[in-house]
Length: 191
Image (cartoon, rainbow, N blue to C red; front, side, top):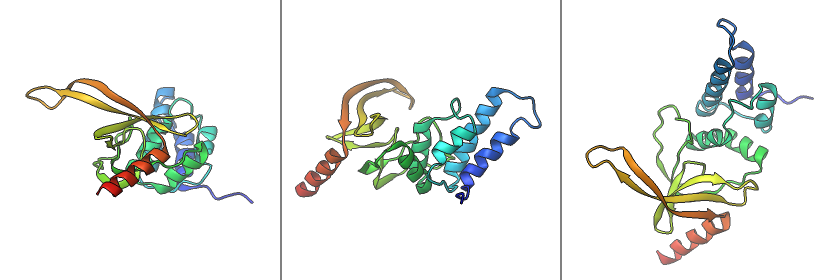
C-alpha cells in the first residue's frame, strides 16, 4: 500500500513536470521555478510527509536548486512544523531549542513575515539568540548534528545611514543541546 503524497510533494512534482511548457527550456528557469516552489510549499504552510526531503530531490533533480539549510531556516521562521519534522527525520537533526530566539531564514526571505523574537524556539542558520551575554547568530550545524556553531559580531554601521560598514567575529561558539539546557538552568537559578 503506498503512502498518500503530501501537498508539498504534489506541488513540487507539478512544478517539475509543467515548468518550461509554455516558454523555452532552460536550466536557469527550471532551477528558479523549483526553488520558488519549495519556498511556497514551506512558507505557505503546505503539509510535508516524512520522506519528502528525500523524495522531492530524487524525483525533481534537486541537486542545483536545493538549499537544505535555507529550507530548514524558512520552515523554522514560518513555523511549518510538518516541514521541520520531515527535515529533522531525513537528516537526523535534533531540534536545538533556545530562549529568546529571533528566527532568521538563511538566504531566503520568507514572504514578508517579519521574524519575531520567540520566548523559546528552534534554532536554524540565521537565528539569533542571547549567549554568554552577547547576541549570537547560528552559522552552521555539525555534519553529525551533535552541535551547531554560532558567532557574535562587532558590527560597525555607517554614521548617518543604517547599512553595515564592517562585521568582525568577536566569538565563535560550538554549542550542544546539553549546553543550552545547562545555560537555561543557570539563568533560572540566578533569577
